[in-house]
Image (cartoon, rainbow, N blue to C red; front, side):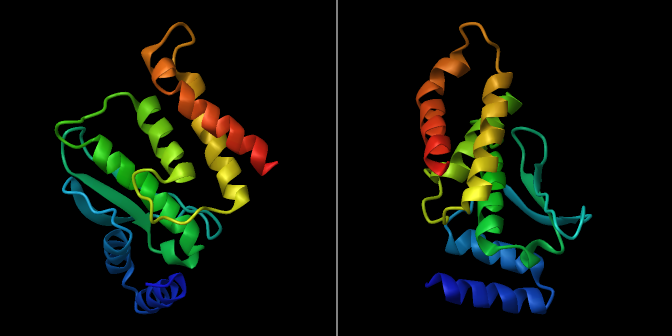
Length: 170
């Protein structure tokens, strides 16, 4: 389905205050559904010009993704990237994976927002947002212990990819 048609459909959902339904539809269209996803719940809006989504639930259990009611007043490309980030957390916290390290979870989720390996249908974010996501990824990478650390070694190639991306974005 062309992106313009998806945008039009989302605007229609939004107009009729069907925010959760719009989110579910996007998960299906962009192939982000996961059995550990426990649904959408609303969170308080922070400010009219900022958006926050979170995946919440115990590790190893179903995850609720909290979104603000004004989710679809933001750029659809940004919203899709934020949903991909949270759906990475849904996957990471699933039984059988149950990834404990928050820094590793965040690193992987921000990496996904830049390179879309798990969710290849997600469009690239704006250069501004890519820079922001890359900087956030590096914050979580840098939080891992400085000594020889299995996580640092595991993600060294991805770190180099992000550094190259940052250079290319200017």
